Length: 408
Image 1 (tube, one colour):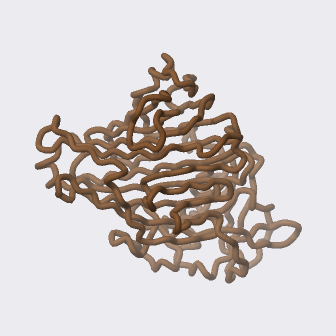
Image 2 (image 1 turned 135 degrees about the vertical axis):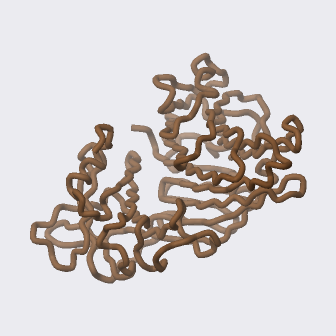
Image 3 (image 1 turned 90 degrees about the horizontal axis):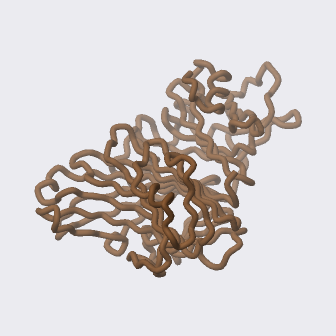
């Protein structure tokens, strides 16, 4: 294993060896004061492959007995995204009700149990050891050949009227029932007034025949259609599509896959600029930012700008100017802490082969207008700029937002 391998993966590798169990890969997203949400991709050699999901019980071993735990299976496509029947591009090599290689299994680290004494009972089909990296969350899950008996209420929900998503401690409302027009965002425990958020700003821009004659579409021009919703005990999944037209020409369809957890929102986005569009469009770009509201005193750090720290105070410091426009690497994290009971950890993940330069956007100005927005000023505005998007190549990015009361 590489020397840079995270402790959790080292633990799994030593425990699982080359047996090919589903535990071979483990991504752990830790949040203070809450159990970490675990996402386990199913390995192609796992004994779970081909099993009917309604015949698999997830349990932990505590106090001398097995106990059923909250979990959720996420069927996956042969591509990068979760499987939705309404997605015409979705392909699988197994029925949706059976486990396939690449499927995901959601669990909570706090539900992990003790190691069962050997030998294991015959009904144990797989052993899933986990570690959170600091040793405090080490434990084991077991998969039994048995029909699940327990039912669990959803950890996150999609409200339809009016449109909103909510988890254990947060709620995000949408303006005019539009998934791209973010409204009030509230978080239980935040020591502040009203919403933390002004909104989400999307801008798709391209030159029309000439690079200087640019046409820009923003949130007001984009109206995603919800195609399918899947509610589960650990996450609610939403599939939506948006058709984008420029000067009457349909240039692309954006596919979005939302995975909403108790304290997280993960959004998969994919689209392809068709090669034929190159005849009329020049230098297409995308700008994605989130505009905070009255978050003075909050602090922001990134994984690629070293010890530099941005402080929301209405003025751009030399440090913040140095952070603006920096190149965002493939492996990236942004930490944002209000110091008032709300913190955010964000990542932007790119698929292999995507080589479009990505620049960091940061603005801190309580007076500067920058529509579309609900309130004047950027307090702060944080996001990413992608220039010269390629034609004929699939663009796929995953935005991850993880909420907590404070950063560790």
